[in-house]
Structures are given as structure tokens and as C-alpha cells.
Length: 246
Image 1: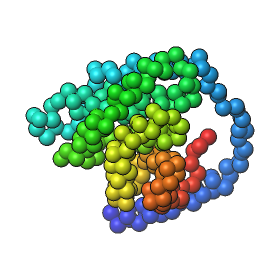
Image 2 (image 1 turned 45 degrees about the horizontal axis):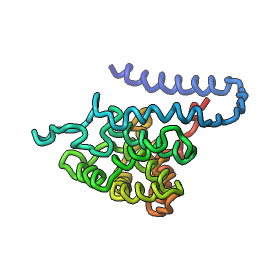
Image 3 (image 1 turned 30 degrees about the horizontal axis):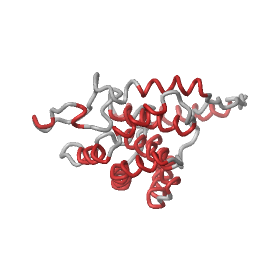
């Protein structure tokens, strides 16, 4: 046993030396980066894209609530629990469905279904509906609901409304503001507690949640949120090296 214990460190050191030698012998290669032109969205394509959220933001079923049940009182219809964002299968999809319609309307006021879209947005993002959405987050089991993917999309929706110069945008931004403020508060409360970033390339990805929230903070001039995101981004990613970006 004693000889075995002495052998293991020796093998580890030998392996490390061999690995270092292999690294020295690896030829340095260059990668050709192809430059492409960013695609341009045209009215025809915008009309086609708009049909997707038009057909889902007020479609209640099928639905994936993703909630924690604390009692029978939590067993409610999706539209009762989330009167603004009950469609498109789940909450965050409903939120970015609304974002996509706002973005398309802002870019193409002449959309075929423009008036229908405006009515849908006014119906869903009403003051009363948003107040009910806010109350949901104060439920005993809901404080971390949609953290941070859904939070990020809510702030992206708020940013899109803020940068849209239209009377409807001011109405919707004002209605959404209580939920926007709550999500900002949740970011500020949560980020200092986060010990390490989630790196998987799916919904919980920390970098995604930080990037959309950063865009919002810069756009509306929220220096507190911006500074916190910058600090946490440095904490999490400044020491990253050799990321396989290729």
C-alpha cells in the first residue's frame, strides 16, 4: 500500500509533464473568419413573423405553468394566475411574444395587422393585469419565479417600449412599470448572492440574464443596476481564458 501511495503522485507529475510537452508541440493555427452582412428585415417578413405571437399571446392552452404548488388555492387557470402573460405555452414565451410584436410595430407601423396587434397589447398589458402579475411574485413560493430568463425578457420588453416613440408605447410602458420595477429590485437583491454563473447554454444561463438586464439599465439610465451587472460580470467571467468560441 505504501509503495502504491508513492507511485500515484509520481504518475500524476509525469502525466502533467507529458501534457506540457504535448502543448509545446501543438502547432499554432489561424482561423479564417468569414464576414457576413447582417440580414435586413423587410415588411413581408415582418408580417409573417407577426403571425406567430398574434396566434399565441392570447391562447391559453396548452400551458406549462412551472409553478410550485403550496396549496389548493394555487391551482388556478393560467389566465387567472398570469392575466397579462398567460399565452404562448409559458410565461417567458408570452413575454417575448409581446416584445416581438412591439419591436415589429416600432419598425413597421404599416404592418397588416397593426390595429389588431395594438388592441391585443392594450388588453394584455393593462394596469390591472400587471398589478396581478406583480402580486404573483409575492406568493410564498414564487419569489424566484422565472429567474433570470423570464426576468431578462421582461426588461427587454420594457426597453423596447421605452425606445418606441408612440403614444401607445407611453401607455404600455406606464402600465408595465410596476412589474419592471419589481424585476429590477429582484436582480439587485439576487445578483450579490450568486456564487458562480450558470454556464449551460439554456434558459438559466447567467450571461444571457445579465446581458439583457444590462441593455435595459443602459437604455433607461439605471446606474445602480448597471454597476452591479458590470461588477458581477467581472467576478464571473474576467478570468475566463481559451473559450472555444470557434
